[in-house]
Image (cartoon, rainbow, N blue to C red; front, side):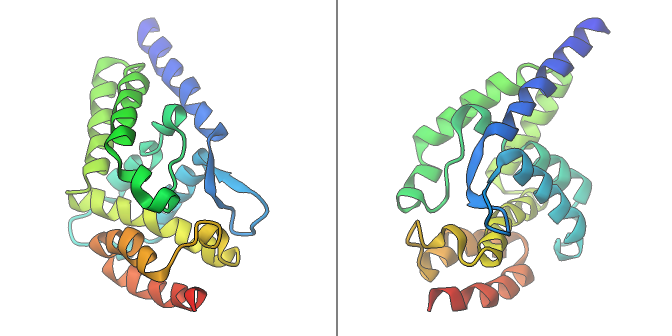
Length: 194
């Protein structure tokens, strides 16, 4: 019991470091950049509130679990904005390899059963092939869009984002897991791009 608790608290203490990882996205009031811990919490709330946008068979409980852990790898890798360097760094083999090493280390702090369960959930999110993961990925993409809308365009200007880039890099992922959500958000975002 003591060894298990030691491992569980080692992981939880390490997870606290996610609060120090600053993201490119600002808070909706534009006052400062959000941290990855805030982002993960906000996404879990998105899943709870937008559950009616999920497709058939989606388990919101599983989606919330995915969203709570999806960015833990940023403790080691940092935030890699989707619109940085023309979006190349975000999906690069080097970034994916670094995230896999981070997942090994961070989830490896847990007792074996929890480590394998949470690591599998993280991998499912990353692959975005199951209905749960597709919906979770949709929410992960829509939350920064809403933050940019609410903060007067947010980081779109600093990254020179075009509407076509938003549609390709973000909209396609949102539409894959929550088509009606992207239809609504697209119409809100379009005016920002002239």
